[in-house]
Image (cartoon, helix red, strand yellow):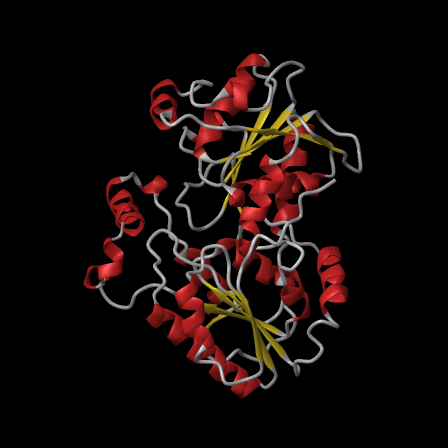
Length: 380
């Protein structure tokens, strides 16, 4: 049993799939392995990465989900190793036998993972995905990506893109399911995957119009059709502004909680080339997995950010303040991933021509991370 759910536009669905599971539900793997717990929480992106890594290992695992208290940040910062930040009555049971391996992500689960290792007498191996708040040596392995500024360290394993649950088998099935539904549109297909407001990135109607103009121009030069999908974060006004700029054959999907009707995996599978909004790390990772020509749309504001009224909203403003005041290893710059994709030849900025190239050998970050976890357990 796996939790393979589509895309950034399917994150809410993934969240519901994880949180809606019965407490202590176990997923059966393909081979025997250490007793493994996955710590999941309220962020679907974190849950996706944790589950993708566990599925790649092929071992059985138990999903532990948690509900957090409003004051969890205070208790976590003051106490470090504690369960005070979770509502235990509304969360999964934590009891022996203690696991040999815990895979986790997110600040809120760090104290829980460390508490579990303490109960096991230090025998539990802790794997953290992303950027930990606790000292680096609190974990046996940290799987991280370029948007974080973690130093080189023996237990820090750096991959190029976030982990994801897209596989060749999923894409083959999606192609079969969606091929006939999209057959009325002329080829080639340019799939356009749009995220939304995130950290310092704020989408406006003007950005929607600009993105619409750019993808329409790309489709005119390439021929064929546009397959456009928004996500749970895409403002309706932005998607409508984009749609009004399209003069080529197209289909535009407005996100909903209906996972069956979500065409995202079908678009990934059938696209001849892809356009991805650059603030979405999950979409970039999933699009990059296909190996198809990839165009990145950068939703950042041109010039100084303070010139734009929308940047004084709560989330973008607090993000910039946090980056100004926090220590360097707590910084986050998704532009690092975008620039790495471009410099490696795997992507270009939207509006630039895609160079002629042979097939690129794309690193399988999910399998590379799984190999490191296997080595950790073997050494143990």
